[in-house]
Amino acid sequence: MPYKIIFYTSGDELSNKVLKILNGLIREVRNRSKLSSRDVWPAHAVTTVKVSLPSTLGKSEELELEIWTTLKNYEEDMKTKFGLSGIPSVKIGDKILSSLQVLDIASDIHALLTSNTYTTAEQIFYHLATTAQSLSEKELKRAVEAEEVFSSNIFRATISEKMANLDKLLKEKKIDEETYKKMKRVYEELLGKSSD
Image 1 (cartoon, one colour):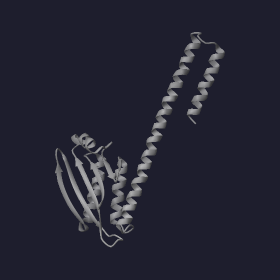
Image 2 (cartoon, one colour):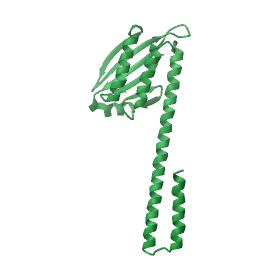
Image 3 (cartoon, one colour):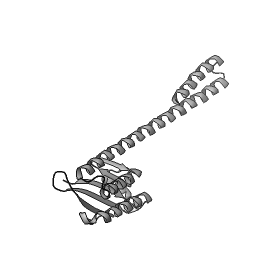
Image 4 (spheres, helix red, strand yellow):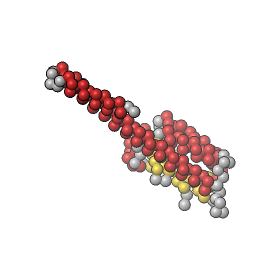
């Protein structure tokens, strides 16, 4: 069974860069690949490239690249159809990567299939699987870090608002000076900890 990688692209600048790399790859592996294309209603086109790779098991294996392109107006349709968070995207196994990671994968595949570093299907499949895993973990880490920053910013905004209210309470003489100083010290310590 062939190892399959699916690219989803549109007319944006990053998609065009990905397609340029993939088109260059197709030209270079044409003599050992099968190429086909078809239109998919309403506004998608699919190019399929099946590249034959030597295997340590004695027979050749296939790396199948499926390249979907769509018109800008139909991006949302493609995202909904395939469960994508953005375009361009690439699917390797059960992992879907997007944005600059798609460019990384396209460049990686080009290098794998046109250099002599990885010569067997098994080496290429293993490299692609570990690359996808690594990029997926980096994406997850970025998402977690972004969530932590977001939570920290909300916390800081809440404490800052409480300090402003505290100043207001003192001016309106609803709390005494001593209570004000104690509470302000607590809030300042909390703000200090949130920036550590």
